[in-house]
Length: 267
Image 1 (cartoon, one colour):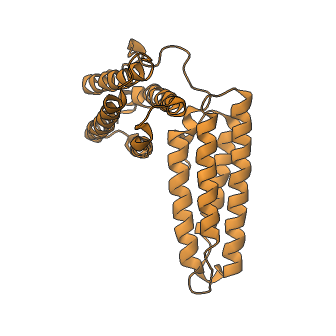
Image 2 (image 1 turned 135 degrees about the vertical axis):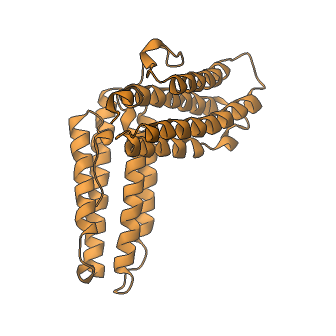
């Protein structure tokens, strides 16, 4: 069974309800007995899940468009990538021998993708900051010296990347941007390990939720194709602007929503 947990709540009722429904549909399929997993039954389940996901994406995108959310183009890309992958899975031949295994494989993919998408992308809906998102201020303090120090360092790295991106007078900035993004990847993983170790030490009930959110963000960082930055033209400049706004926005949202609660939930 896959649990729809509190850390998956975006605070937008319709989106949260549809996410909850997706988890419910997946769990119904997981509980289907092996003898009932005929090729036709499995095909029907997959079509139903796919249709519901596509409808949900449409609702989510409509909400974001109404809010003039700057993350909409990124969401559309992720939604389309998911739909394309599911179509490929649905084209695989189903037989009485492989239907059950195929269903398990696809459900595992759906859940993994859904968790990561909610925690790394959907959490950002409506939360892009109007103030400078690259300045570490007192409102981000967790009260944990190690965590606050490492958060400050993350803000510094993201701020450096942002400054380079917006420096129109500096033309040879590709190598430095790549270096900083690589540093951000490594320091983020280092910080998450420290934070999780601290939470384990104090027996925090938030640890598993934090691990899921951390992994989703690391996956997002690892998916950045640095080859796209070889020659910075107008399109790649736009890509960089969207990327750095997402990274800064995610970090802010995660700190305010989850990290500031670490000490308050100590058991």
